[in-house]
Image (cartoon, rainbow, N blue to C red; front, side, top):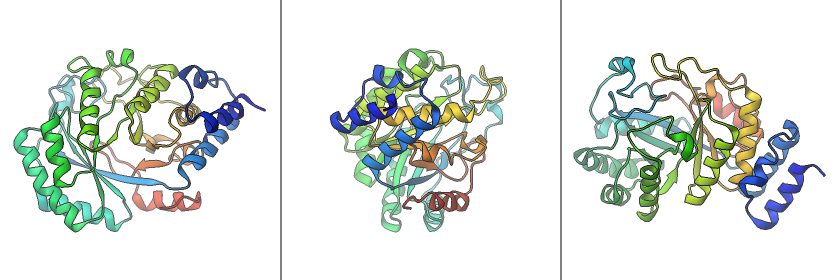
Length: 320
């Protein structure tokens, strides 16, 4: 029996694997590892697939110095990023209803900036009540480092999830951002959980981090009890410290996703930004442990069409 199969069997019995156990599979034959991860996904999650779309609801240069981000104020090209206030209720509702009509199940409302201002929280609460009346979408807010009061208001208005990426391991995060801390991100996630909100939190890969950093991230997300873990692949932005970074090979992305499934057996592992650069648009990853995706365009980049994704996922036997 392969090491992957042995750990798979132990996972079924104990319900969790340690970081050391998962890292012991780092050199396992790729196909054996991915097959085991896919079986774990089916065992714990079935064939359910979660497809979401996002909208940039408030745009412009950001005060934070995230070294990978096109909207970061530390990036000279951020001046080219469109600046606009929070979208009104009718614009959000129109877009959400169109995405739902096309087959989307979850809808992410994304704001630039360190934290959504209080007046915009109130306005978004009004929009949320309309979205809940007019759609069946699960709505998630990516709104920065919100505190307890704002999170509770959003929950009361009908928002169901909050998105806040940890991005990497705590030690590597310091190389990505210095204007806020890992602990501040974790505090927002804990506050969201206390407010009764689900949490979507993942990472960005391809910025020089190690495989161990990625697995540590997965373990951290497990400890925080998140329900959805996005896997973002770096799209190098000119003018940022990572502008010359080499893209990850598809085999490395598959291996990372498979190992994350051992750490996170029962959550949605979500291919997000950068999936469009994979030769097969993520198809192999959806047979290696991943079972969710962001579809359509992203905040500052083009994505993969919803129709293309739905066709691929049905071919793979997923329930949409």
